[in-house]
Length: 224
Image (tube, rainbow, N blue to C red; front, side):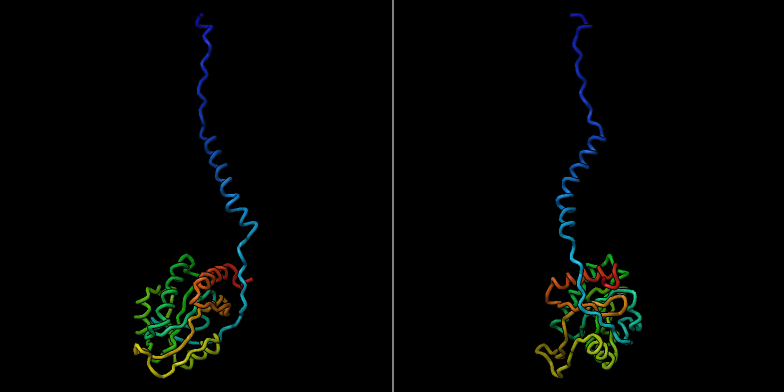
């Protein structure tokens, strides 16, 4: 057989980069469409329902840095509120720990979600006492403020404005702390200074919902 009659040996086909890229895209589509796109279309995220729309009254308090805090201070931002006193050794450490978690979990919305802890023992909780308490819980002073005022101003805001009761029973607990009863609920306030919901801090799924609702209000201030 002459060299001219030698059968040609087929060259190996090259797998080009574009072919590999298209294959990867196809794999991604096959994974994402059934696991992400379809469930999102068929089962869209639940739109929050806000049952409350209560405007806060005008108030003037002082925070743990000595700065004034009024109703106008809250406008334009979503605010999550709770109630504490620095000598509390029962519910307050728990709610403060949860508020710290909320601070950490919403750090990406630092400019739009603020935190506020109101002392229900303002006679003892001076600016210095609140500053030490804020430091103990790692509060970011640009986001999380601890406030006090005369007892009349605090009661006007908390009891009449926020519809949250508290009471100093006048004796001591077994640990020696003042026997002050107050709510462990968190309160969600929108950019207009309106209360939009109450969230039991003993129920962690409610706190998760609180954070979702706060994020929703950042994007839709009216809650609609």
